[in-house]
Image 1 (cartoon, rainbow, N blue to C red):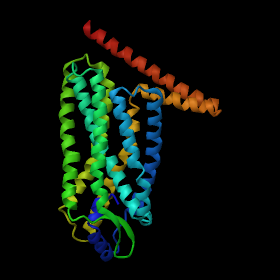
Image 2: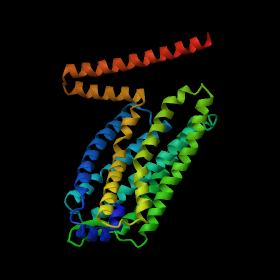
Image 3: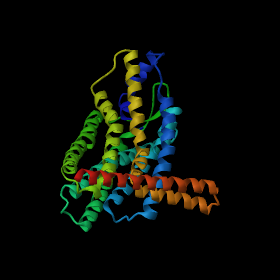
Image 4: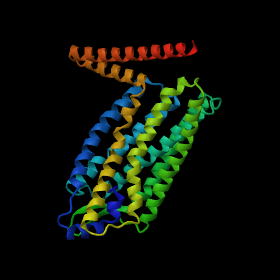
Length: 344
């Protein structure tokens, strides 16, 4: 399956589990979490796609990036039920599905980080180099970046899919695993090219962006978008950072003894769950935008009206919207008042 560390060390892990009867098995917990993540991700990203397609201008560069990132999350999400079944029972889907799900896993992962980096660069160009490019050039940059992200992701995932196949463990349990002799080199390349290098680019871009915001006060029109993208970037690296570090560690560290093996397996499983949960976090972060919240509210209330929903539910949505609008107005009035007092 897509869990490369488990795949690459399957023979070592199996022998250790065979010798250590009391070792805690985290696979059942992981499988349950994968199913929960799948449900939340499909719901959140599905609603986000509906909002973008129905209410937003998809010629806008930021909206185009957000749309593609939602698709990337959904592609990654569709693999989770298969890994869940493999964890809860065994791999029962055959060799072709093993390769296809592995390819989908890596397409979702690779495209997500490439699109996130491109989105950050777009914010850098817009905020720091605000005189260049114009709207049309930004749009073409976004289209080119999205197309390149999918081409690179699909191309890179092919090699991962070719190397996986269904193998039987020592107790005749079939699993989807990678038997490539160059698997450790692949881990180093994955962590280096698709985590640390994008991380360095993103840190550089946001350092320049935040410097501009601290120096000037006339950047308010970009504030919401910049904060939203900053939260998306932070969420990505908080989720995937520990997992990538565990992948890097597992290439040279081999636990000795049952307790050490148990602690390492538990830490790896927890980091894996955290990393996979990232696909259902982006829709929540996009709701930092008041406009997207308003569109989502309109989408939900319009569906309720068409289905003959409960008027009290509709009233509740409307009251929540009114409260949010009033709080925004009060916040703006308070900010203007503070600025007026500062000038007095």
